[in-house]
Image (cartoon, rainbow, N blue to C red):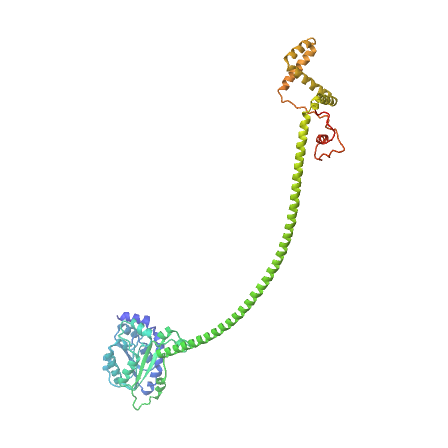
Length: 477
């Protein structure tokens, strides 16, 4: 256990130098004793690693330390400090009365039962000289983090000792005056303008000490008054009051901020109302402008519509005129059809008349004569072929002509070749010979006959004039 506890102290209590620095706070309490007593003896019970024991010796005290832990004693011996193994209460009980100027115990009261603590305090009052000091340091359960968590890290701790209990015990045991020192607080929290809740819960001084002075009798101990009247460390009540003040300040700041925000909201609402009015006016202006534009567009559209209606009336009138023209053209076409039909009837009557049949050979003769004049060779050959075809189509006539031609062999041979050529041509499609009517170019202009339509051909015009002439037809029966 000794090696474990020494390692535990090294891990959680702090280094030798750190502890010695923390112990400097007690020097103003003990140094006046050097003037009261020429040989000031001091005893440190539970001396541990010897930090306080070494501080006492360095400041002129004849100090001795006692401890039960072998590991702690080895640390003291390593520094050549006067420490021995002994049980604290037994060692005190072996000392004569008024033999010590200083009796100290750092972090021992939480390790022993309360009855042993009462006996230790009582023995301290006995062994101390007049004006002598008892110093007891222990964890401060007022710090809620220490009292609920950190205190129980050390498995040798019995129970936390509240500072009011220890202070009462010291006074009850006969000490003349006491002083509470709260220790090892965070220096930043001393003058911090504001605190958090966690700083309140764990910000109180994690350790405290009760410094008790025995009655001095006739000795002048006024040199101790200043340190006993001083204030040390941070209490939970002080932190709580400052936290509440912080909350009050924050509440006031929040109220002021709220008032400021309300004022800003009111200003924004006024600005918003003004903007709403401007927006409304702008909307009205835009609507009026839009209405004017719509009116202008409507007027333009109305003018376009009126013009379109005028154009529609114009085109309707034009359509009626063209419809009348179409009707007139239809009537003209009907008249033309009737005229053509009448002409066809007259032409058919002409072709079936006796004079037309009687004059047919004459017309053919005129046609043949005209062709002979224009193309004698071609027309002659055509007449010969036609005659041969007629002969060849009549067997009796063909035999008769053959007997006659036998008398002229050269002529007969020529006619045979020509007949052969005609037979070969007879296999080809027949050709139609167009004949020009003998009256095609005749012009009739009776005085009382209506003029022929302009789109008639010359032959049609001649026929039309002849048909509409009032002269009697001599060739009609």
